[in-house]
Length: 328
Image 1 (tube, rainbow, N blue to C red):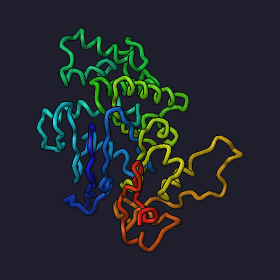
Image 2 (cartoon, helix red, strand yellow):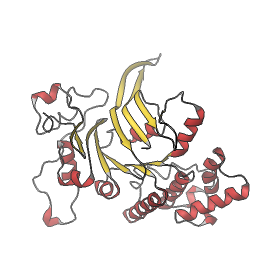
Image 3 (cartoon, one colour):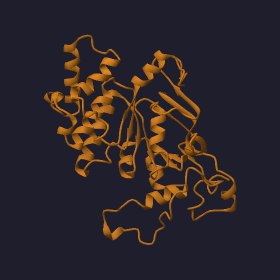
Image 4 (cartoon, helix red, strand yellow):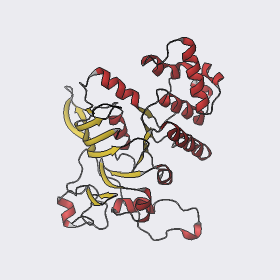
């Protein structure tokens, strides 16, 4: 095991008035729990605003969790809890082992730094190279590893296409040979023709370095092909966890089922005419509804759903679901 997420919550305070007093909270994450192992890919899917990116940034320590625990298992050492006051050596190793690829390749690279400087920065911070020559050689190898020429090291981000920029972001993420990479919708800002190239590159790198991926995406087809497990999120809550095959063949949660029905079909003769799709918008995370967070949009809603929140429960060896219809 690399990482264990235990009941992580993340609330963002809403400040109002001239004294900036806290008037409420945006409840981005609600007691999210899972584990991830070496070489494993966990896909995270859900509508915009469901907490996917916040989860990735809490794990990457861009944000501190409001509550809950994050356990990291260093190589050949005992598991430790990662907190704001964790020993600096452990925290530095954690940041080295857990990297992130951001969604927008146009804003994730510093326009004032050359590509060589961008890739050299993490190597210098963690003192990986002992000389300038070794540093330049490492940067060249990283560029070759992601399908770019070493000569590109002297160029700036504005000289590259979106697909090339994302390759540079991937090179930066693998520079320190991390054990886990958080992929925050790495293909959503790219052309369809480029998306498959980036996905294949990520899969090849995972096979070579045995890295784990937390793969965040709206694209269910992509998540199906890259994931060992899929975690479905709604309004900051995990509502279902399953293998891709089980989830796509038999989605148990009504929200998961609605997501599956929304997948476009390439064959016009097999269009899902008359099938139920999601109605309305998700409730505000500032004031989520009582009971099941999905009950305001669920076609199977019961009175119990309006007052009692279902727990994420094991219903088989490879399946968890949070729904009163499935768990008595």
